[in-house]
Image (cartoon, rainbow, N blue to C red; front, side, top):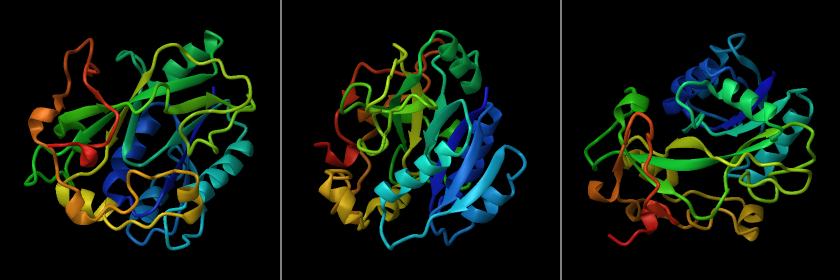
Length: 266
């Protein structure tokens, strides 16, 4: 089974070696779309060509984050891929099966054999434990342990889906599938979201970020638009869960937050 992830990047050097190595090791091929990176991102991706990264395409950067343009470019790549299954992937994410014993490719094959054609992912947002912690250049997948479950709605991150079912994630900003004949697998897989590697990294990543007027008119990125660096402060570690909860059940979902941490009252 050919499973292809589309990964659009802009200045993601801090994440790319881990992200690419992990997902390629899960039996997934990746098409990278570079959105005008000015750091080492492109060179890192080029080092993976022929090793599971099947190509690198370019998408011009207009001076602001343009999710509509990104999703349209990814849809074009997906249409021309010939892949059996497709994945929408971000560089700061790790996607995994809900069963520890299988790779993501094996899990998707299992779901396909059941006759399902789409998989939702439950989001777990990992944070540094305090303002002094910095995981840049470190093995953040192993060392970052504190997280919260982010669930503003049910089945909101349908990141893996079968090609050719006639559904699209464009109208939902890459979250849900609309149209077509979607048969969702009843259980969610896991999405580990390493949103920032330090408090300073978070401030630089989201503070004063400019978003596409088209996206904002659709109601996208409302929780990030207008954030300044001073708005982004890490919550007390007592607000977070510690990973893994147990070998059989790595994540706790008993306390799911509808909003991201910068909107919490603490």
